[in-house]
Image (cartoon, rainbow, N blue to C red; front, side, top):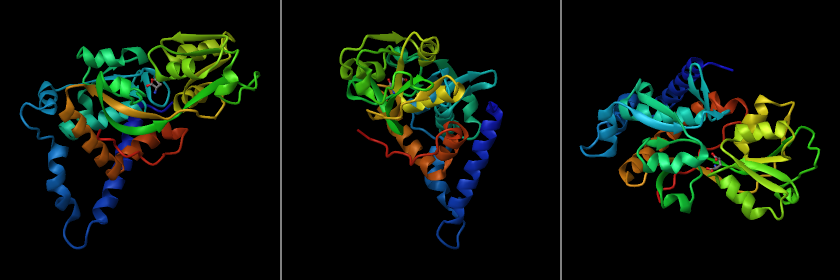
Length: 300
Ligand code: GLU
C-alpha cells in the first residue's frame, strides 16, 4: 500500500496542476492568480468572525475528526497516519482553516458507525467524516455539510457467489451481516423478508471476517466500502454489484454549528472547483474506483 506521505505529495502535485490550469484559464491579460486572491483570501487564509465556530477551532489549533480506522479506501489507520478519501477531506477542511500546513492540525479519533452521533453530541469531535449518510433522522441530532460523495448499498458474497445472490431480494432465508448504527442495517431489516438471521457487528471488517469464515452468507453496506474490502481480499470475496439505495455522504457537524456547516459547504465547492477534491479521490479510492462527478452540496 502506498504511504501516507506519498499520498499527500500526489494530492499536492495534482492540486497545483489544477490550480495552475484555473489561473491560466482566467480572463485575459491581468494576473489571474493574484486577481482571484481577494475573493479566496478569506477562505484560504482563514480569517473568521469572532465568536464563530471556525474562529474557535482555529484558536484551539486543532480540528478533532471522527473517521473510520478499518475501511480501505476511506479511512485506514497505518503507521504513517490515517489514509483514505475521508481522511483527505478532513485534511482539506483543515487547510481551509489554517492555510497550507493546516492538515497537521487534524487530530483523528476512531469512529465506528454507532458512535458518530454521540461523538458530535458530546463534543468529542468537531466533525465526522466517516462514510456517513445524510438522512432526516440523523439531521435531528447532528448537522451535515455536503454531500461530498454518493454511494449505494450493495452486497458482498464469498468468491464465486455460491448462493447465487443477485440482489437484495435474494437475501430471504440467508444469514446476513451488517453494522450497528448504520443505514445499511436499517435497510436490511426493512427490505429483506424472512432472512435466516441478521447479525449486527461493530465494523464491516468484522463482518468480512464472518464471511471469510463461512459464518454468514452475505455482508451488506455501501458499495464503495465493500469494494475496498474486496480489493484487499480479491480471492475471498466478490461484489453482487446491484445497488439498491442512495447513500449521500455528508460531513457531520454539531447540530448548533450552522456557521461551520455553511463554511464547509463553501469549502467543498472551492475544492470541487480547484481540482483538489478530484486529486484527493484519485490518490485514495481512485486507485480502485474512477472519480465520479462531485455531487452538488445540499444547503438544507
Ligand atoms: N453510509 C452508511 C451509514 O452511514 C453505511 C456506512 C457506515 O455505516 O459507515 O450508516
